[in-house]
Image (cartoon, rainbow, N blue to C red):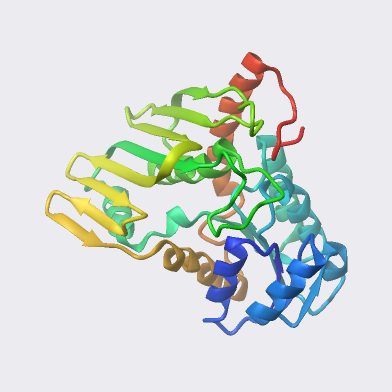
Length: 323
């Protein structure tokens, strides 16, 4: 299968390295800057590069497109890929609004192609046994907590690359956590969503802090909080059940339970599971683990938070999230 990679940031690197462990062919890179696209294609071993997504989509040799571009263009590019008849894997988030996510899902369902999302938190192998116990009724989640803190006063990504686009703490980083909660709560009706989403910062032009509290009708709760003001990175999640407490420190690579700490798979290795799952889904014609319709519950919650912010501050375009 021939792969087209849209974007050459950190996730473009991680996905390309994962693809090299498969029988997929690194075919084409699409980027906004010709020099960067060419350098990335040569470094990672792609056969071609271009600055035109339309040109890449017109190539009948391309089977799969991975959309790893800035978040604000995921919706538009994903729909283009699906309408062009390509299997499409979309980096998180699927869109920057619930309506946008629904448009992508509608295009995906109409296309008949395999499409899905890169939601790596669903793929943690050390959490699979817990999911099986929950499904069997042997263990019940009471509370999930997620924390994400990073310094984003200067627009530099995790690789040290100075970005030409702005990130979004709600629609990108909180999407990871909220989707995990909806995935583990497995359809439990939502009773209430409460939130704090900060005013736009005078320098960055974006909200820098966010807190989201979710309650289900089954009396389960999820709390996600984070800041772009932190002086150092902090990234973990905790799951409290009626039997155990699971603390996943992603940066340290450890899982702590009552019995002590054990190592867990590195974030990049875990993310590679998304690629392996998607390629298998294309080969077998099944939906991927993070299918389009399955991410909509998380998008509905993010939209509630955004709607509350719009009521307080006025709906408007901000860097990284144009209306």
